[in-house]
Image 1: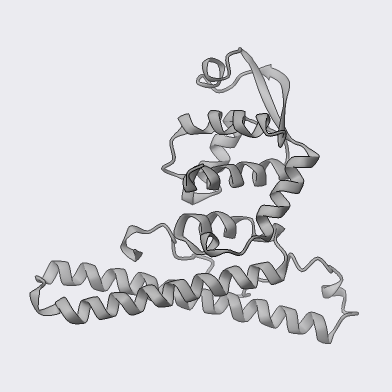
Image 2: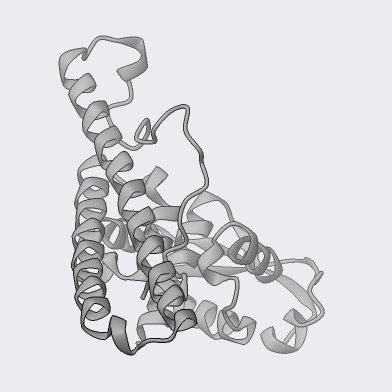
Length: 226
């Protein structure tokens, strides 16, 4: 399985955990809700769905008339197919959510993981955020070293592009710092005030975002940040 197909499977499982959908609905959600998939090939979605069904993680249920003109020939039938997460699929998605290895820090995978932070435990969120920050700090150090070596040989436009890339990474590091501090503050508050009405949720899956701040976040898939 390629890395990108693995990310797509993760996102599909996560969306279907929220509610059953047919293929056209999934396409719209992937495009509008998960920005990292704005450029993915729609032709890869239906093979992905078939793979998930074959693995026993999804089931197909017959619905009404297909709304998506591409869905009928791709699915091999005119009736709208609704995809529903199975118990095994939910368990598999929970396992994927708990993973905090290096893949979780990479640009596209991190964006998909972040999109489902609301379903992720606080400890896992912290490990992913700290891993992502560490990865970007390493990248930033390499970019600075490279710029220092080549500055004199670059024309003004190439130099400006290099600076823009560095600024994009620096901006994401600052954003990650805010998120990490907010997660830590929420964890400390939960420990110090266990009986507070705002802390009754013991799952650790909410209250991690900074308050009263600009909600626009850097795009991890921005090519200038690589």
